[in-house]
Image 1 (cartoon, rainbow, N blue to C red):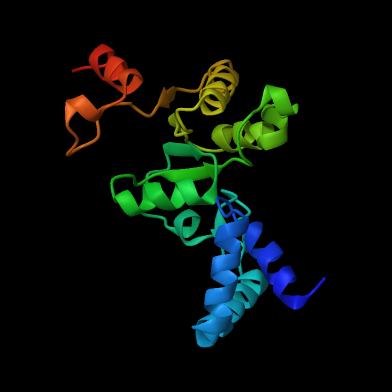
Image 2 (image 1 turned 45 degrees about the vertical axis):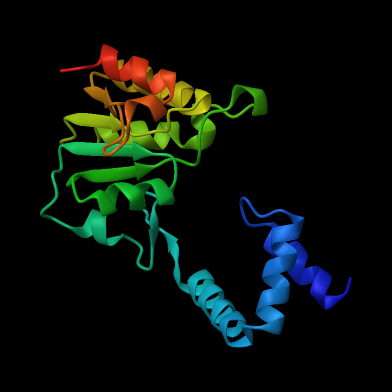
Length: 193
């Protein structure tokens, strides 16, 4: 395979990048931004060498235990369960959550034969039972698989006496009602306060 074709195929591995987008990126890097291509190579090489999985929450970290898990000022009683390190980063950037995290290995998918054990369900239960967690917040997506994940993990956690909550759904701040999807609007009405 030619070098250009290899580059296009490598870029296609990224989520949401199809063949045309991958080809445009490859041509751009080679024709207009070789310095950017070198920076991309250096960044990927450095990240692959240094970034690992935190032994406590399973998020990304450059140390065996991440900065969040090492932060003694956070609320030990709160444990947010997210599907991915990207979801953890979004919650952190919100600045409104001061507890700890548990990062799953994705979502359950009955169609793909992936159950709670396959995404870290047993490790989550062990972590939740390990020292002072008073509330487990299921912060999975509101997709069919995210809902199934929240339900199955929630039932397993509740059966062990843990308090389990779910992120609320509602109308996004700054949105107009006429543009809100019907499912979100129905949940916002049902869960109004």
